Every structure is written in structure tokens, then in C-alpha cells.
Length: 189
Length: 189
Length: 189
Image 1 (cartoon, helix red, strand yellow):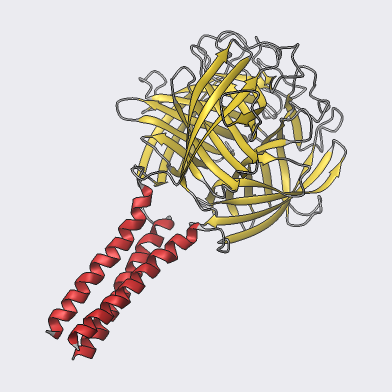
Image 2: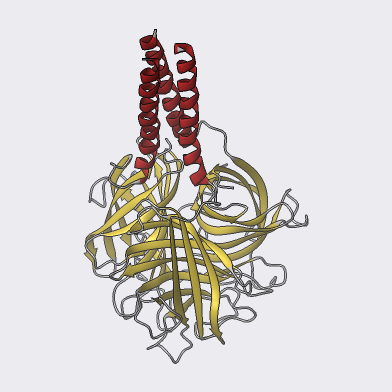
């Protein structure tokens, strides 16, 4: 009987211990739900030489054949843009911003529209304080594009995840609006 | 008695197993102490057209209204700067550097001073070999600003954490010194 | 006897539980094998004013003393380059590309060759779909240089690791080929 007790207890230990291992490893597979999901829109108005007051983005680097007041041809290839775009909760440019999307993007392909992004979402609203940092390729003709959430601060301390970008509006070379579906898989807060 | 033994053993297993779960999860909350803390200063001397020999940073991108030998007005908006700044252990520009802060920063706001940083600390001292990589927004009028440690190599293999930046000195447009309080929360080495 | 049983079971619980802790912590030390290893080559052909058709990289930012059709002297210091380079499985520029290396690099040192990289590998082959994002310093005269894998998408969902870069070929200012040995230590997929 004592022996049986011993074995049973041992057996249960094995189950419990392995559970504790699995319950951790599980965190490392995408099947799990994200620990946080957020949806934002940001709005980019490019400086074209005559709209400095309402521009939120400006070309600061261009190829030999480009300039600072018009996108390079073809495909904006070689343009490097610094931006400070309002972030809104809906797709309305005039909604009260909940933060700013700040950083840079560049166009890096000669034969199609393709961008590369490196920027931060900086929040200062009642809902969110802190920042999320992003980096990744943005093949903007694709319906959706995934970039990496490489870190965060404040409410998003040490966050990691994926942001899925969608072009929600595109008006010539002057205005575009991106929808960002952010899924965090590492949440420390 | 045997039954009681069994239950007690089982009970203890539960405690031990859950402890092992908690002891891990706990790592995922900022309450814990960082696994490594470091404090450095780095020193940035901007090229203004006449100080090439001692400049550590140079404007390489500027808006239409800017140029490469003076910051753009207002608020340096649109300037993109490449830098290679000495890192010191104290706030003295002339202390022996323990490494170099290398990468880029840009000014992305039209109505205030706001920068965005993407750079590395490259160490090659007796104390540290390897690098730490950073990215984040730097609203430089705030007393402290948090950016992300997005990775590391060598002694800082796979590191992640937060760097809190403080402007330790600021002399016009030519020289500034930042203090970086680095707290790593993921240490693999 | 029952007591002895109890103690033995308890002792085993301790071993098992601590095992489960270690087996996790162990993941956090580089001694372990990477969870994924990849080797790629990418090929960079810089635009020099007369090779637009086959160029894969273009200077978009330069210091006051530089220009967009030739590297700045000395040491390319201050040049910022946007690139879209083919990725191949071997060192042959003309092998079928398995993806594109897209992003930017800059030269940030006045007294030697030193670059800083921020880019993505974008895969769209039968073998790999998705992207890996990189950042780090590239002291290109060193035989090997480590940069950080700061995130990934698709097949490389949430990946982190280290990429070791080697200059596999260098032809003046026009062409270079890098070999990237990628070791992932965080694999979620």
C-alpha cells in the first residue's frame, strides 16, 4: 500500500511538473491568443513644396534624380521620409489623436512600390502612456503587411509582437492612411 | 496513514510545481530587478561647416529648407544625422572612451524639439566586448525618455531592456551629452 | 514506512520541480544550439551615376562634402544608402534569388570603414515565406561582425537571434557581397 502510495504520488509529480513545463512552452507558440490587441490608424501628409503647415512628413533624402518637394520617379525609389503622423482610433484624420507615429520610412524598390519602416508609436492619452517601436518591410501593394514590434516602454514595457498594416486610404502622392492591427505576444505589464 | 501520506505528498507537489511556474512568470513583470544595470554618457559634436576635425556627427539628410552645415529651422525638423560618438563612464568628454555610440538620429517634429534614435553602443574595453542595439522616440525636452534595447551581441548576447536617456549637457546646436541608464531585463549571458 | 514513502516522494518532487525550472532557464543561455540556422548571401551594387539599370543600392543622404553618385571621402563617412539586394543561397550574384535584403545602411566613421545597418530579409520562396528584421553595427574591416535579429514575421514569427556577417567579396566602391550566418535562439514556429 505504501509502495502504491509512493508510485501514485511520484506519477502525479511527473504530471504536475511536465504541466508546468508545457504551460510555459505554450507561450512560445503563435496558436495562443495575443496578450494584447490594439487597432490604430495613422495619417501621413507629405510635404510637396506648398503645404508645409499641414504636412506631417517630409522628404529628407532622395536619389540623384530626385528632390525634396516631389517623390522620385519611378516608384519613389530612393526617397527617405521623416514623419510625425497623428494616430487616431478611427479612420478620420480629424479625430482627436491618441498619439503620434514618429520615425522614418524609405522607398527601396525600382520596379514596384515597396517601403521600409522604422518608427515608434508614442502614446500620451488617458488610455495609453508609453511607446511601441516597430521595424520592417512594407510591400505596400499587398493588402496586408506584417512588421515587427521590437520593443516598448511605459504601458508597453518590453512588449514584442506583430503589427499588420493595411492601406486604408491613398490619395496620390500627398496623403495616405494606414490601419495598424497590433498583436502583442510578449506582455510584461 | 498511507492515504494521509499520499495527500500530503500530492499537496507538496502542487506547491512545488506552482512555485516553478511562478518563478518563471515572475521574470515577465517589471517589478523584478533588472538582470543588468549600466550607466554611460555619450557626447555628440555636430558638424557645422568649420569643425570637421572634432565633429562626431554630421547632417546627411535635410528638408528642402535646410542644409548640411546648420540645423533646420524651426526645431531641426527634418534633419537626419549620422553619428559616431564616444561613450564615457563619466560626464567628461575627455575621459577615455569605453566604446562608441554609432548610428543615426532624426528630428521629426515641426512644433517642438523631438528626435527619433536608432543606434548601437559598440564596446571594446576590458570591461565590455560586444554591442547593444537601441531604437525609440526621444522627446528631448522631457527630463527622462525611455527607448528600447532591441538586442545585443557579445557580452550582451540576446539582451533586451530599457534605456532611460537624460540630457546631461546641451550647448547650442553644436554639443550635447546624453546620460543613458540602461536596465536589461533579458540577460542570456 | 509510510513516513519514508512520504519523504522519498517529496524528495522526488523537489528534483522534478527544479528540473522543470532549469529546463526553462537553460533556454536562456547561448550554450544551447540555436533553434534555427540559416546561411544566405546578399549582393549590393551601388549606383555610381551611370549604372542605374543594374544598381541595387543608391546614396540618398550624404555629408556636405559628398554627393549622390560617388562615396564620400574618406571612408564613405556620412553616406546613407537605401538598398534592395538579391538574396541567394550561394555566392553567385546570378543564382536565382530566394528573397530580397531591403532597408538602409550608413557609414558613420571618419577614420576607418564602419557601417551601421537596419534592414529586412524578405523571403518569398518555396522554402521560406515571411521576413527577418535586423539592426546593428557593422565594422566591416573585421572578419566577422554580429548584428541582432530583432524580430520576424511569417515563417519567422517573433524570431530573435544573431546574424554573423562576413564580407565575401568587395569590388571597389561598386559591388560587395555579404555572407550572413543567421542563428535564431527564439523560435515561435
